Amino acid sequence: AQTVTQSQPEMSVQEAETVTLSCTYDTSENNYYLFWYKQPPSRQMILVIRQEAYKQQNATENRFSVNFQKAAKSFSLKISDSQLGDTAMYFCAFMKQGGSQGNLIFGKGTKLSVKP
Amino acid sequence: KAGVTQTPRYLIKTRGQQVTLSCSPISGHRSVSWYQQTPGQGLQFLFEYFSETQRNKGNFPGRFSGRQFSNSRSEMNVSTLELGDSALYLCASSSNTGNTGELFFGEGSRLTVL
Image 1 (spheres, helix red, strand yellow):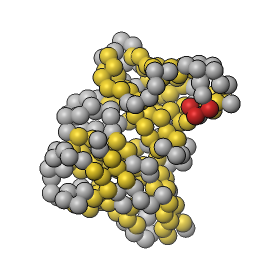
Image 2 (tube, rainbow over the protein chains, first blue to last red):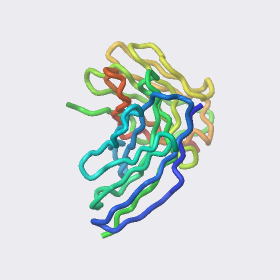
Image 3 (tube, each protein chain N blue to C red):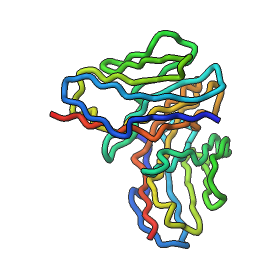
């Protein structure tokens, strides 16, 4: 069975600074997808970034980038130039390739606070 | 395009009662998944429906059930409510094209069991 671990329950960062959220996972699968989802307070959860395991290049979406280390089973999220709107719960998630579209394995989340 | 809509947004029930939650997916999305979110356990997968068929099921007791209608709208039901069922129930839809894993979530239904 796959597991996803986020070891930082809470983090804070000053506006405009950079912060890195950690995620490790355990799987025997070779082909899979990894995700970071963001859940702002009292708002819908949205996809931040996605990484295919077969791609060596780290995914990037504007100020968000990942450091994907397949051998170490590590998948961290870096947020550059943090903004107040980045304040949210961040969830790391795993889905095996060919798996059920709706069945993602989520970590327990990291609560990020961006301070002015 | 309208997003995923969940109703009701908040509800309070007592132990032993039953509850039905509704989810309308994004137009054109045929896959609907349900998750239970609690502070202690995080997000746990309940089940997924596609074209009115349950495609996958998580590790929850039989008190938790669901269904999907021909218009892709989905409902989940919890019978004989327990205090531990208090949670945010999230519905998510996806287009099921390319199996990309991108889910579109609703705002959730917050259930409190007294």
